[in-house]
Structures are given as C-alpha cells and as structure tokens.
Image (cartoon, rainbow, N blue to C red):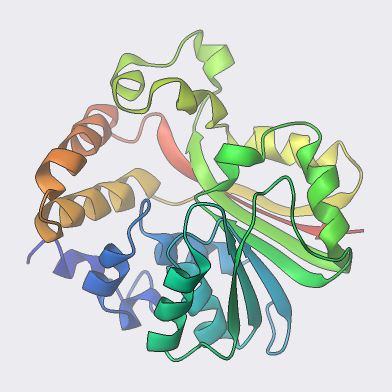
Length: 254
C-alpha cells in the first residue's frame, strides 16, 4: 500500500474516502481536513438548506465537503486564499451554486449578526480563537440555537503544566504550540462565557496516527514533499501519541 492509498479508509472515514486523496492533498494547508470535519460533524446537526460559515476555509476542501455531504449553503471565508481561486475549486467540484468564497479576517467578519445556522472551523481556530474575547465576538453571527464547531491542534497536557514546549514540538512548531490547548481547556474557555452550551469537547481518536499518515502521503505526493513533511514526520514519531492530538469541540448558542 502506498502512502497515498493509505488516505482511503472507508471503515474509519466512509464519507471522506469517497474523495480522491490526491485532490485533497493538492488543497493541502494542514492535516487531513476531511477526516477532521467528518469526525467533528458527528456531534453536529447539519441539515439541507442551512447557512454555514466555514471560517478559515483555506483552499476549499472543507467547504466542498460541507456542501456535498450535508446539502448546506456555505460561505467560505479565508484571509490568505484569494476568493477567485477558491471559487474555481468550488466550480470544478460542482458546488459553485452552493458555496460563496469571501476574503475575511476572523476579527472583522463582514456579515450581519445572527445570519448563520452554524459556524465550522477546521485547523484554523488556533490562529485567531484563543483570546478570551473571541467567542463572544463570534457567536454574534449565529442565530439563537445555532451551532459552533471547530477542530484544532491540541496537546494532551497544557504547556503551562509542562513548564515548556517540549523540544520535539518546539523544533518544528515553535511558539505557535502555546495555542495548542487541551479539549478541557476549550470546554472551560467556551462554557465560562455562558453564551453557549458545549455539546462535546474531546480529543480525536488516534489523531497523531492520522496526522502521520497525512504527512507521509504529502511527502510522497508533492514535488518538494519530503523536505516539507519530514520534520513533521519526525516530530510525530518522536511524540508517539503522548502529547500531540486534535481537539474537536462543538457547542450550541443559547
């Protein structure tokens, strides 16, 4: 089995396995976004016709998945990816009529309040969502009863508890690992606002193994994949699942 074919795992990720792994890797901006989203959506109630904000949508794989798999109307918002580039992905994937690409910075969202049924963020929240004031800002855009969901890199113990960023992580990630919190940290951070009910906060099952599969596939698939992915592969092997994971957190607005 090649590293690329290992990304097809219908027993674990039946929806994601319907997508060409090469296509997903071509839209690579982090560990397998469809695996993360498929797990995350297990604790969501997404229905056809809902309006969903895909916050930090990157090159568009998660927005395509949301539109295809759940029949929702998606607004794909990202600061780094040009809307016309994302729109081309959506058109090619046959969801151009259901996904709108918008350039937006997460702290200055150009939307009306209470205009979304759900906000979903995959592998992006760690860059903008850790501040105490961010959740109160973000939930303004959700309707009453609206759902919030995010998947973000996580540690099994807080850096503050460890006393330092572990060397094998610091060498690759640097200071950014300070924003990689535990699932319990996220639960408290959201619940203390009394603005949402946290419906799930957990670490993804075998997240580090999934991440390793993805990094190895990236090393095989991309022209410069070995040099770009080898440090991540080494970090994950050194960690062995002791500290590195992904947090999956969902909530509903009161």
